[in-house]
Length: 299
Image (cartoon, rainbow, N blue to C red):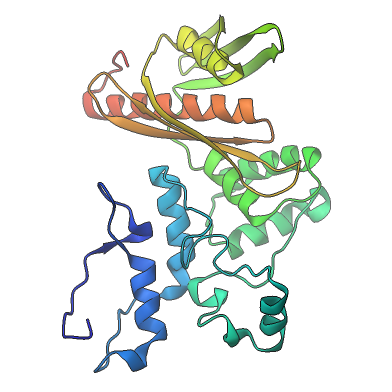
């Protein structure tokens, strides 16, 4: 760029085949904060305030988790622990930060909601986070919000995003998980029991054993749905900190034609989150098959 190049091949979060590509957010912010380094009026015309939200969206859609120490968008990018650093930040922030969190769309303050925040407070925060929900979607999300608020005292922005992605931003539910029970422990064979309702109203129940609680739940889901896609990848992360944190599971499965699909599920119970993620991925395959061929196929 300094030598005259005016096109950069890059991707959000640096995703791509093999070792990936140049990270767009890093390129954009380097140009944005170092105008003096480049000759001429070099600009990207990108709204930097949308970088963080876009990065999170890409991570959710692709299933690739952003590493904590990633430049610009990693959760540790603006964190400081050293006493000298903290003292310097308090006195003059620019000493250790050439950019502010607000530049990439990160708010300097975190709002915490709870059960007593009320429907209006929940809706207002959703709008502040950029979600434009219909009335039915608001009702669905708010009911889940109250359910989560009964289990944990504080609801953070990350929890709200997980609730909306899990309860609202979903595909057509060919299979709905109505009941899940998993038993496991030392000297006990993990066993999972599920009850699943299909879109035609039929209810299917199944029980199965597995190598662990998550595997047992997945085996039961396979039996209840009659679908057996190949599990390619499974990951679990804590959405927020603390023992009451919600967990978000992400799975990647492959159908009989070799196509891959990603499913997600969130809950304060990691086994439930895992089961919801697996069923979400199966629903995505069913939705794709129905859209393309007008009929369901064996997965």
